[in-house]
Every structure is written in structure tokens, then in C-alpha cells.
Image (cartoon, rainbow, N blue to C red; front, side, top):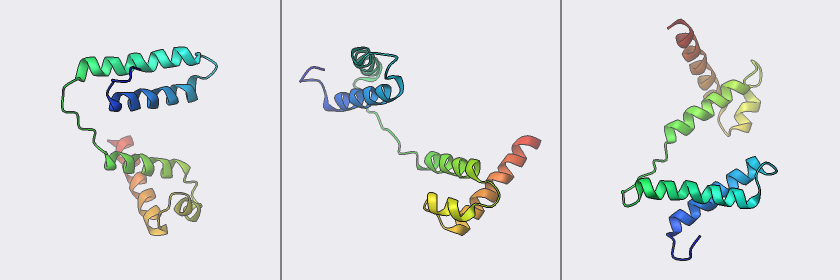
Length: 110
């Protein structure tokens, strides 16, 4: 990218290129990945350039995703392991599993 290109867009392009490289190495060349990441960033700039963009941390989204992951890995007897792996207390794991069970029941019957 050009040296006078905004640093946020350069960082975004590099991030996109890294993610594409990790997933598409061998399917796309490094040059193709570079071109695609530049194209994505240019599309974002063209469509949202000049707008005050706020990117939320979305902590509740992260929390829900982690709870879903905990429940997915729950096998009925691994509360202690999940507490260690997810850096949560044992009581938190019990609450998360219970809440996920209740939500799944509601979704199936509701």
C-alpha cells in the first residue's frame, strides 16, 4: 500500500492478509492474497470513508460465544476441566451449563 495511506487502513489490510494467508495458503498465491486484502480495504474505504466509525467491543457477544463453546465441550462430567480451560470458577461453569440447557429446551419447544 502507498506510504501516505492511512495507518488504520494499512493495519486492517495487513490483518485481513494474515487471516487469508492462514486459511488459503496453497489455494491462493501470496500476491493474490495481498491483492484481495487490498481490494477489501478499498471497498470499505469507498463505502465508509469519512464516516465516524465506532467498532464495539461486543463483550456480550464474546461472552455468549464462550458460553456456547463451554456447553459444546461439556460432556456431563468435565466441569473441573472446563473451569480450568476457560479460566472460570466451578460455580460459573455449573451456571453456564445450566443456562445453556434451559435455553436449548426453550428453543426446541418454543
